[in-house]
Amino acid sequence: GENVEQHPSTLSVQEGDSAVIKCTYSDSASNYFPWYKQELGKRPQLIIDIRSNVGEKKDQRIAVTLNKTAKHFSLHITETQPEDSAVYFCAASPFSGGYNKLIFGAGTRLAVHP
Amino acid sequence: DVKVTQSSRYLVKRTGEKVFLECVQDMDHENMFWYRQDPGLGLRLIYFSYDVKMKEKGDIPEGYSVSREKKERFSLILESASTNQTSMYLCASLPTNVEQETQYFGPGTRLLVL
Image 1 (cartoon, each protein chain N blue to C red):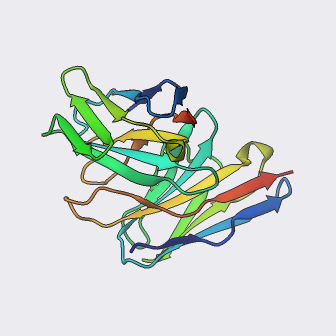
Image 2: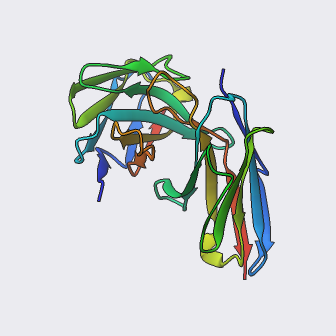
């Protein structure tokens, strides 16, 4: 079935450094790729998303890149801050006959140290 | 602003009990989802519903059932709770709109089965 692999599972950076999280997906028909941030004890919140007709999208310090040929997409956070510390989940939306179903990666725990 | 609420933040039940987890959304969304979240496994889809009285199995439906009698409410039922169902349960909703694929999550219910 559809699968999304996410790496690394944990990531530790110094404040101000960049952080990169990578995901690969199995269903070549997937066309929507959101990234969620989940702070401790809180619900997942969408931070950025990209569709298959776009190769890159940026929103302030956050950017996402998509390589459809290789079936992978990445989250880039620049100038990291302690408040960026959270668990990040990638997801892919496989073609499912019109139903909006997401397959999630296992998550990356990002720790930003002051 | 979309609001998705879940009936309990924390729940403790005994093995064999019947457990009801309730989710309510106030934005008239057609699609609703139940996930469980476990460390290292990300979010796994249990069941989803794309309309009142309609339901579809997700990736891990065994041991669970659902009910969608009203559009705003989606219930997850554990017919006979077992210790391996101890987890965080997240509900999400989504409108049927080809331009909108972002799922909105509830705060989660942390269930402990003793």
